View 1: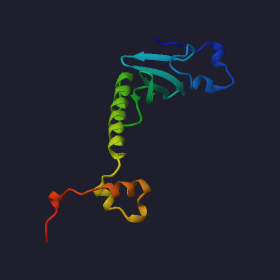
View 2: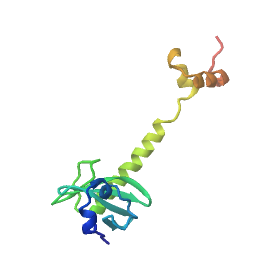
View 3: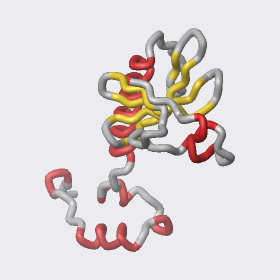
View 4: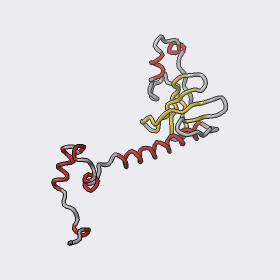
Length: 139
């Protein structure tokens, strides 16, 4: 299903009104593909589309004359759905990577950080830290 802007909306003085319309807006140009909604943003070549999965925007894909791309890889996709799926897969991996890198350091890792770099929360954690004794050897 493709919905187009009315002539009055297309001639609006403020182009941001058209660009920032959510996919639920009746004036937004929305293209639905299985699992995703593409909302036309702007440009002639490439055309820019915001990609929504459910109610969340996951990124932007581009429609060229001969192919689609998503800006996160160097692939040229024949179909919009393939570019959207590639973008979605990338975002899932990026989310997992972000979650794993944002975990606070362990107490053992805190011991390797310079004292001046530790925050007050780090110091509180270290005060409560009791190392496991199985690795300690009596000298």
